[in-house]
Length: 361
Image (tube, rainbow, N blue to C red; front, side, top):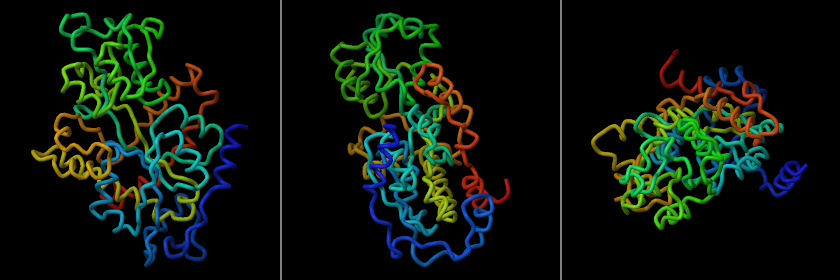
């Protein structure tokens, strides 16, 4: 009932439908979204006016490929104008997406997302964004330096009895927290859990109020720079190939603009491939400069110290990771009812985008 009330309130406050100068309706008789719509849209004539796509943006390095595609004009080449709509949390974007106040989001994979889908919210998971790839993960388990130097912490089992901070047990980092416990043969009762924001956890670790924390950049780099903490285990080591964020489509966007739904992912993949090419080169500055424009991390000098986000070059979605996370949160009681992922995941737009980029695969 509470969720329904929120959705009704959001729908009542939704902005007026965009005019024809910002969006173009499909031609009369155009097929609805689906396999047929995507296939036939490949030969459709692009409208003169661009389709405006409202993208739910939580500014972070994990969305680097979106920012690159926007800066390089890849979205414009697909007849799309991306408007970034700022949000504070992934959970707050879900109702806006379901009520067509947003078209697309780069949402975190968390218990709230699965619960919303299970409750019938008409959103689809259409591609992957960030994941823990070898050598590229912006989150890590940071331990107070004196505990490492003294030999108090040598293995995961040594975390027993320590005060460990985490932003949320139901977030993507929460899944990594439980993986840390499993690797040490520990339970929640074996550690002193503290729920803290990243800034608060950084202060607490610096002054010794906590012993360790699972944090993300730039907080990890700042702690290492200050000498207060050690980046003990990267998330790519704790939970390899863990899907952290995914691309989500709202119902109105995919039903009314199937061509743009394919074009958005096509442009995104071009951005993802460019991101990986630059990050694997000798000069990462082009990516750093774009990130300073789009994220709160404005200090260009901190980027070489930070560990970059892992972004799959083809926007592939690790479905097994999603299934494992949902099973974890359901087992712990954070998800009352599991979502039907076979229905929630719709990869037709991603598959068509890859076909247009690379031919038959």
